[in-house]
Image 1 (cartoon, rainbow, N blue to C red):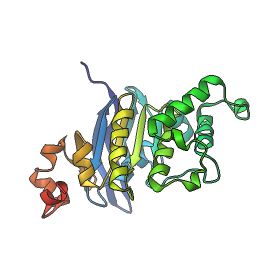
Image 2 (cartoon, helix red, strand yellow):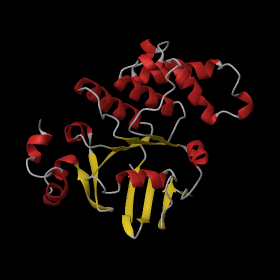
Image 3 (cartoon, rainbow, N blue to C red):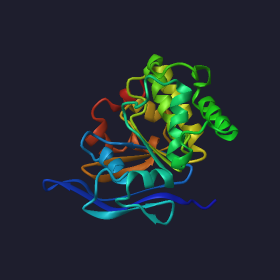
Image 4 (tube, one colour):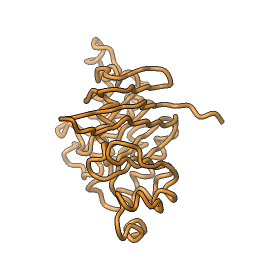
Length: 254
């Protein structure tokens, strides 16, 4: 089977006050892949997501999306319409709206302006119900978002991204603050949604990474330190020295 690239970061450099946050970074991932991105604080992980979503402009380099589109410095709404969706660490939902209404509102990202005030058609209602079932919130559809647990709010925001039919989802520490049971459900969810799209996950919870990651990319000082199967990464001497530190085996097997 031929692998196709959904994302290619080509020689991207980002500098702030003469400090290189990203230093000629090359990075790529394929369609249908769930990739985990790890590294110490300041390694450039969030900046990489900022570059992909045009929140930050690179000093040099390109972002190639969907095999051929140079999306470097595109405006956000154009990126969303072409299939790039991002979730930040802190969930951003409409607290006063129900779970269903939050997902309904998210449809507007792909809806012409003149149709925004119209009721959902049958196909759209089916899509909302399908997405809520996928994230496990079908029984909470009419619950105000403010009444959800932290984990449920994270899943709701993922549902709000899924309804936009993205080709690439960018998730920043999606399991932060969750219970172990919620983390397990989230890990399973990531692999379910990854079959139809690519998912790039920034994560610090190494137990979670070990349990659910297949291919891991490690960033250090704005460059790619190494990349490969999680079993190789956790035993790589350089990764142990700059990131995992002493006692890493105990941490990752806890």
